[in-house]
Length: 96
Image 1 (cartoon, rainbow, N blue to C red):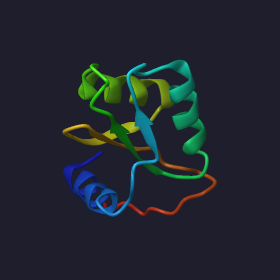
Image 2: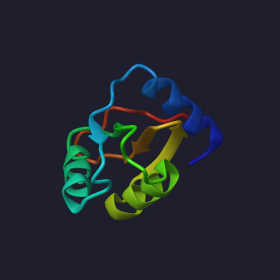
Image 3: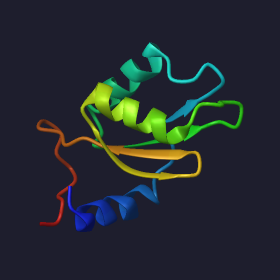
Image 4: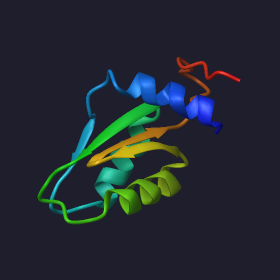
């Protein structure tokens, strides 16, 4: 992913609300599976990490990306944005 594409996705992510919140139990297999299923209908997913979660958001973002086949777009504070291109429900056209 180029920096231009990443910047475009960051702009889109500013206007969406977090779909998931990760709490004190951290990154569980259930959360990972729910994020994977969300990529069936969405290409861009924002995830909020609650204050009572003591895991590092950067490590969680990388783990989620690896497990779901997505790419980390950005991590700001306790917000994670992931992107995975959809073949069936293509809505986002990335710049070249």
